[in-house]
Image 1 (cartoon, rainbow, N blue to C red):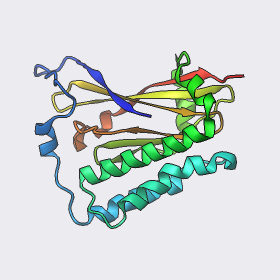
Image 2 (cartoon, rainbow, N blue to C red):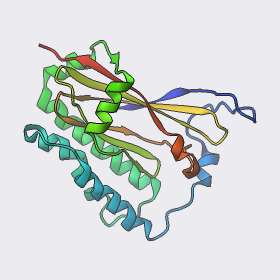
Image 3 (cartoon, rainbow, N blue to C red):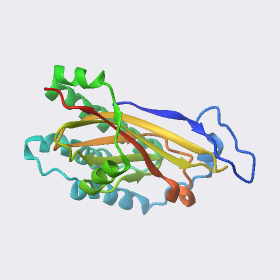
Length: 214
């Protein structure tokens, strides 16, 4: 499912916050260091971790759950891990796995795409985090494969927030459909204002769900 950027929610800070017209900032992107040669091996190792950390005990949906984790390392093999290359691999794999999801769910997917979403409580978000592996930052791309531990809820969207270089809070949102007992991947591209020294400010701000149909 497509991810979208959320209008920044500015918090008070020592310097007047900057309201970027677009979340994509050329100036900030220019401050990100170019990958060193050894980054290729490191990034492929990170992609390989997706295979190890992928929580897919429900073997009926195993192929679906492993789709993204298998696709990314294949797309990055023998390629220099510059940000455009990684972003293209992540986006392509997200789209391919979404097609597989649509084929598997058929008309059921349309019902969940138009359902009334509700917010998970902080306690329920914690339950999701405990049932899932860690999220990954692949250069400027956020990837999190989450397992749905709720028998009567379908997970629908996720919002993350973090602070930018001027301490203005930025938000991103992505949507997918994660059925009970299954694992799905939330992907957010171009999270490019989160400098390395600000990664600790990233938080899962919101998860929504729909009631399971039938």
